[in-house]
Length: 297
Ligand code: HEM
Image 1: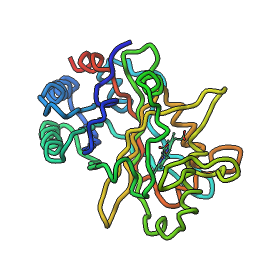
Image 2: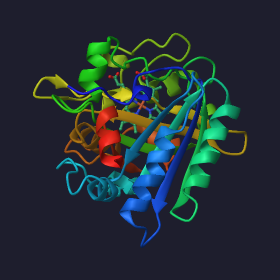
Image 3: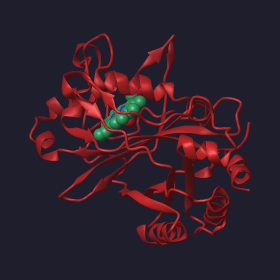
Image 4: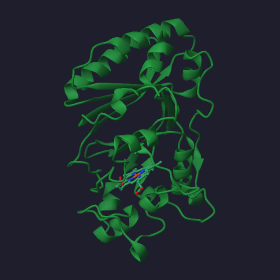
């Protein structure tokens, strides 16, 4: 089994800088590879990590058609009662993680300058830690993430692979005014955990359409665990969550998203969607560490 790119599991945070680029038409593959090689080889601060991922078309182009078979572009989800998740698939994803936003910005600037004339920056999100591991809705996020190294790797990495991983990113925009107008007990029923103490609701207290009920999914008795590394972003005027999750296959994302959006036979959907809307959505492949060096060579 190859080693993954280190940033996937290294939790140095608390600042995150995410960039999504689309490659310009007509750019030569050799030019692109050499630019990406330089970006990949450039020194980082020793407390920083950089993770690089590719959309299907670009990965296939860089790897001479050897993209993983199940890798595909994210497509719009048309859910129940008019709810939907947009698709905004792009070509390259960068995630810079570090202790302060200034050194992350330096790397983001360097990447953007290097790609000038080669790719267009379509999405930039600056994430941060909010009161420990809380989302801006005030609930702890990440509690049900796998705990041990082994469980994290099993959830996130393609089995017996080069250390590669599938990735879902979605920028979610909160309606905090509406969410915060609810009683805490109503908020807890929407999330499926208590707000202050982060305890999972049990028995009759746990609604079948809470966020946890819709995402805590099993298939053939196997829990479809993800390795989530999302972070809150934004300010008073606009804010939300940049959802980032790694998985050993794309099906895990599909199952959870379908359950969230009510693309299931039970007629239920995730109540959180009424207080936060996805405004971007993309699937990526994150090559393992040496696999990345190889496809850029
Ligand atoms: C606005 C967007 C979202 C917010 C604010 C949010 C927030 C939360 C919170 C507060 C929890 C409970 C604590 C925890 O275990 O982490 C949670 C659990 C979880 N969420 Fe989300 N989430 C969002 C979107 C998503 C999406 C898009 C997915 C999957 C595609 C997802 C998958 C999960 C999973 C797998 C769990 C753990 C369920 C369990 O096993 O208990 N979340 N989320």
